[in-house]
Length: 136
Image (cartoon, rainbow, N blue to C red; front, side):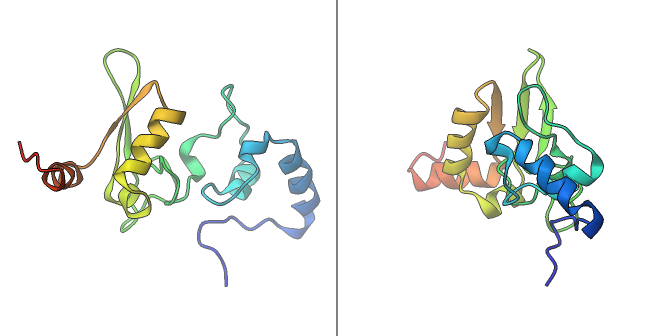
């Protein structure tokens, strides 16, 4: 069965892909939440801060966004917006919350995106307030 979130590597490029993959920083050597094969076929290189852009993020990636080729009907990613102070804000989508709890997303942003802000969809924020007894 084929994986709809992994780009096939042609047999004639398999060795080249394997060599390229081995040279990536260790934290990028996975295809659990990023279509690393797609990045290779497209010729992407890690950015200065050693990660790939959103193009091939899979729906289960913490910051799966509308910038992913996989953001489509039924699996729509969140939105990155620049804030007036030059930082970024991530507006999580229901798809982000389909794969990760609000607590997981908050923890991820605290650890890996400390310069960015996370905004959860209002229905999740409201549900969390009600659950904690604070409906105002």
